[in-house]
Image (cartoon, rainbow, N blue to C red; front, side, top):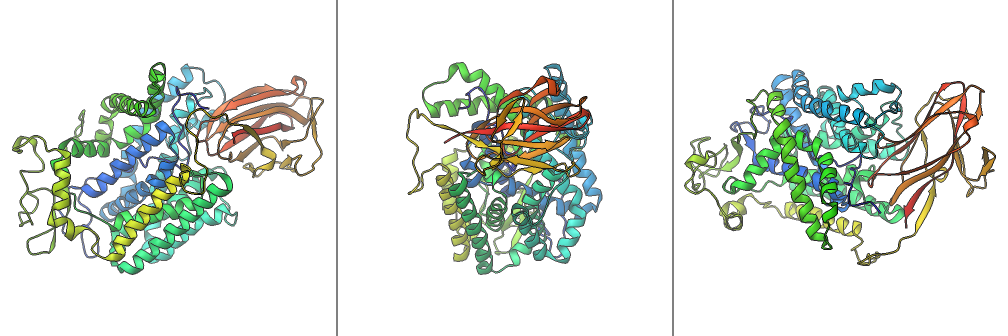
Length: 635
């Protein structure tokens, strides 16, 4: 069981995020206008509805990474939503400035990452990072801290993963930005076939029909998982979603939702996996269903500016999303360490205290580094961002949609008067509005009846997706009838070895000499492998250099093995390393045949999605043997 002194590691598919740098990397300019372009006729400013979802996704990501609640990934697939919102904003930027939009996005994304790396890398080096990064470039892998086309390396300390395990999102976002000019051109030529092909790609990859191999294989897998959501953002920007009749739209969402939910339930039933980040294919389908529902259903949020604390929190989270995303996991670890001596026996009290401390500690990097996001966006640096005017369609007295960005945005009549300006606290007659009172006014307002999904197909779509999300979360918590319910209190759990030789192994180094990879399994009746004078009935053997990737089964939190050198030149030396989601958790240093075997016994972060066994040889040719290699899993 994981100690309460450590924060849960995020998974790489990933929750990530949501939330997420796409929020602050967006432009604050007026969206493109013109026929068929959403936003035409709207005033400059913020879209409250999208900002609220963005902020909610970022909060969900922080909570998920602090507590490791896997059920949150299926209840609220935040990463797919964030990529869709980013895709919509990217399409708007390309319409305004053409290919120069790519440079603008990089300008807003990279400086906050550089500031984070300027603290993280020296800290890791000064606290004991000595092992050469296992990638092909060695120490040259540090270049990915400057231009993150791959996940940058971190140290081999047990806590080093907290500084790079969430960076998969930054990397995926960067690739999608770089590809966007070509993607948008293809999308506008064949819109829905392009979305369908993107949705099919991760499914084909999951079953081995499409191969995503090579040095950038992890990045290709992540891009394929969220490409369809990014393209759905293009469709949202171009107004294509609104053109689909309600019945056809609801039917398409239902097909995606049922397909994605069925895939998730099957993954849970067959392998005990309910983590959306580890269900390739099912992740894409379920995320698409959720995103399509969010982008079609737009209730009025006129009440939000009058609830000043909530409105201000949404503004700050959107303007400081990159900083919050980069720093929340290191801060979560610090919070766990600080609170460990003060754990109470009340679970929910611990949750509330941990959340409070995490957000209080996050205020420090937000205050110290958040202004970099202002500089990157060419805004005046500020300790806290100034509020931006909101925008969004609001019906006039004549019933025609027009844009308003606050009471002074258009000068046109509105359906009902607003109690004072929504921006500019100096002019507000009242400083606060109670949240419950605001919610009651919002629910009772005639505007709600006009703006809710008035079509029964829309209501069914929203209700159906919400119900499936709750059912999936219940399945992840083992609360669905027919599934075992966890017994409260301490339970003695058996630990079961899951041998790597019985798992699906992928050898990333395609140039390795034959035989590339040999998996010796006692269950398959294979002959034992002898190394160091001892016979091992289960082993994994590969020629050096090699990188073997395997996805640990659900519930596995430790890797054990004996490393040894098989067929080798007399002068051969081999270095063995283990990486969990790109972070090195074990490094043997250089070893020779004379050194015999060595034990590997390393804990894995709770939400590890990929483990890599890396063997390199600085001299001579050798076979790297991972004898008795197995995951230790709670059953």
